[in-house]
Length: 386
Image 1: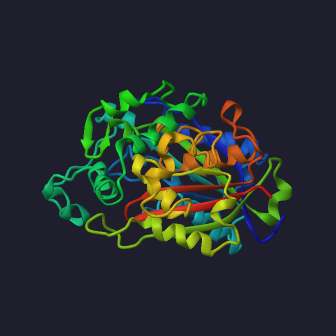
Image 2: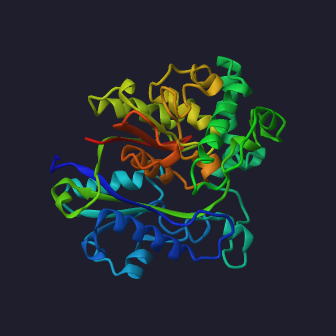
């Protein structure tokens, strides 16, 4: 073990569902307890907390639990903590924790993402969304054109691939079909029914070329990963997973008229910070809030050339569980639930430890990449089982 490095030790997840009645703070505590139990740590050994994006009062379902609330609820003696949205994306909270570890500010940091969007939409009187009388900020460039949803924004990038590179709907469908097939083997997945190509092609179009099955779905859940210092691994009982490299990019924080999504710069930066190469990766857990985002990450990380993402996934064989690059082995956000980025890092650790059960990738995987974000912000983690 490298004592100067940071490792993911304990991982945990709460119940995953829609319209849950269990309070989001209790879901977070459930996930923390599972992570602590796996790591063999006590709450008294935790000295850091990191989350994205912190509590958001204007949208309580999007992020209902801030770092300070969890610290108070569990009596954590935090020497360092952070929570905010102005970072490179969801997994940027793990990047921040690694910085705290390496600078000596913490030894064991709880990193978490809690979402409660389905329940909040079902009970708006309990979780009211703030309404504004005017359009300003980033939305002033999109709302006047009725581009109110991220599906509209991502569709522009997807349509460029259709027009410029020949991406087809049958190719794009492979992300959703692969996610569904993998989710059927994941007992915690939100949607475990099969999806056929005919169902996909006949589904309602939302923003061409993205249809209903290209989108993740609002979910209620909490996911926790504990980041530990290499010098403190003698305190844990689980198999640590090393954070071999990290990258995060915010290249012009706007969805309006940006030429390339931030994933492309992030992928380039990731490989510049490690001796590993794309060919060394055994498993890819790539953000799929919309299916095209996973395609863009495949290109951005160098698994195929820019514009070749559709051809790379055509037929679904390369990205299947038994393919050359198993993708989103837990079902991704499209099928397993919108865990908002943290589910990908969680699953990468599960697979590297050989704990995937029916969905476990064979061949003793040792290197995985996990990503979050799309559009103007992105984060990538390279995780290694030494």
